[in-house]
Amino acid sequence: MPNAKQGMRLDLRTLILVLCALTALVMLCASYFASYRVQRQLLIDHALEANRVYAAKLAAITETYIRNALQQLAFSAGVQRQQLADSAALRAETDRVLGQSMAFNSTFVIDANGVLLSVSPAHLRHLVGGRMQSPGVEEALHERRPLVSTPYVSAANNLVVTLSQPIFGADGRYLGYVAGSLYLHERNILNSLLGEHFYKDGSYLYVVDSQRRLLYHPNPQRVGTVVQSNSLINQLGTLRNGTRQLSNSQGVEMLAGFATVPSAGWGVVAQQPLTRTLTPLGDLILNVVGTSAPLALVGFLLLWWLALIIAQPLWQLAAGARTMDSPETAEHLRRVPAWYFEAAELKRALLFGLNLLQERIGRLNRDAQTDPLTGLVNRRGLEFSLALLQAEGRSFSAIVLDIDHFKRVNDNHGHEVGDQVLRRLAELMRSCCREGDLLCRTGGEEFLMLLPGAGLEVAANVAERLRLTVQDTPVEPVGAVTVSLGVARWDAKGGNEPADALGAADRALYQAKQQGRNRVVHA
Image: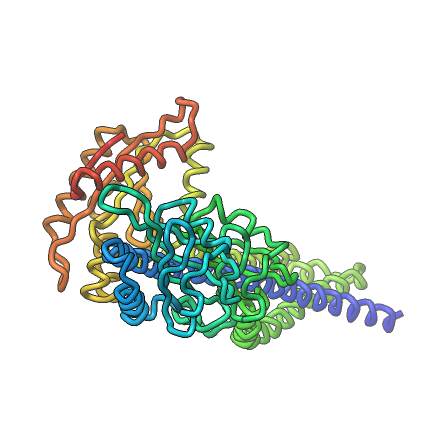
């Protein structure tokens, strides 16, 4: 019988130890999973935004190139209209346009009947005098306006895109056009602009036209082919820029940022394989495990000791139960620590561990909703606050603002000084707002203030006070900067959405910009 009781006592203690160990393991696994999910989303968001910014920058560079090239051709068209009958002068002018920059692979002049009057470089001059019947020529003759053609096969059997300017006589009569071409399968300015990829993290670029035809791709064999299956390319005609997580035409899951070239209708897409983006995640999780493992070991030893303490009163109570007939049993039981006290201590320890986990998850959530540069709320936090205000039925006023001519600050002083200006503006916003107002950074130099319960007049006064404060507060080494502000109000009983008020404030900000900047306009 004693052996059986001894075995029961050991089994109970083992059960408590296993329970404690499983509890600690579950908390650790939950902590690791939360860390993994948050870090994974942060990596994806960062990659998407980096690709979007990079695509937008290259789209802007390509747009600048096209405008400059068309301007060169417009000047040449003015020269050529005076000398269409002089073949030597035509040849000299086409040579000049080709040689003055790397903008084109060839330049040429075609009259109103489609006859080639002049061409450079020299090895193509055997085509002079012939009538050109390619799709690009017919498109330019038909449109009679500055034009970026769709890709076509030229008379010299090259896959080309041409940029052209019409030639009109002094009497307004159409005389033909002057054009420059890019050979898509040879070295061209588009390769030079896009070929050297800034990021070395597996990202790559491609450019498509409005007909889904690839104009540039890291794989030269794909240039000129039509992309058949890609959900992003299907929508490039209706979207100016943005981000998308998708599977490309090869079935690989990608994180893509995109932008369009307005004058040509081209789409620039920068994308990176999802697997490459998440490669650092393994090291991050290992670091978390390495940091928490010693603490977990200490915690396990502590739980083991607590399990012994919990089992000891049960053993003493069992010993007292075996000697119920002894006079000393009552006193002995009174000296046994109360079972519920020990249970409460265990519960408190577990709740303490749970609180630590919740605090850690809460800290990660706060970090995910905070702009790291200014300390203000980011877009994710803004969306949460708007949803909360709408659910509570609380009206608010919104102030949308951005820094006037902020690009000059970055261009003249560098991005580090630009970041200093953004941080200083955030401080001034805090000094001008009320307790309980929400301050948010929504974009590069774009900010938002939510004033719960404030009327339009109060919000306008706050906006004016902030405008004057920013205007009168120099930021070294930039000096004084100014902001333009738009104010609108959302009435919880009005039946519209909070996003409508933000849109109205955006439009008011746009009016402030149009009216000269450094002013407040309210909807």
